[in-house]
Image (cartoon, rainbow, N blue to C red; front, top):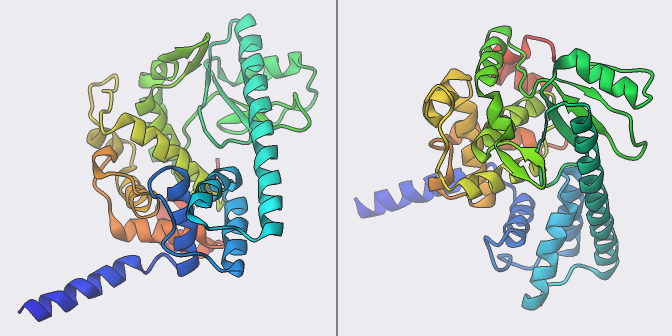
Length: 331
């Protein structure tokens, strides 16, 4: 019986690792080193593996983060090939400079909105390459503000408009944060957000408002779902979610109707997706169970991870897996 149980356990453990290829595992290990979850890689990557890790980091918006991991590996004698190391270091420094500029411009834009008596909240994201601000004023007034900046052509989407203030940096004003393809689900989202909108302005630092961590966790989760459905999801979005959930440590603030996290996820139609994302965060970044929004679900997580890491996204895979969402056009 012991031998049978041993081989069953071994089979289950091997099955558990199937979604992650050998080189993907090295990429995730480097991420865990960068965020302090690991001290060193399980082995030294070969030159071609370092190239894969670098390209994957670029594709997922994590070049600078992964370079932090590279720097930490120096103490263990692990070195990136010299030519690649020079390019990687230059990319990381350029990203840091752009992030400083983004932060400065974001503050300036929020203050301009304040001068127009428009309540604004910064959508906090560690690895964003755009300025994303929620404005509590509706689409019409957001359009008027955009015109005041001298913008002639204004293209409005369901959730946001592009603000062409800086040629080298995209900026967006969001008059809706959440938006689902399925109209029935979207109606629930809009009602829920209307009831909890004030949670977007609970944290204030230097007169800049940001959402509560719990509100941010919900917004990030729903935004990541829409990015996955659109074939635009990146690992950097999940890393931002990891940071938020780690800060919360499983202590979620109640929403306006008194609902807990489990009830809220059910209400918003996010239960299964959230469970899959928790599994991905656990497998790739080592998120602790106590920090999760809900219990992880391996089957959903495997699908999300496969689609997230695929170099060529499959629209048909998404249709088969999420038929009730994919049957509707993008908002």
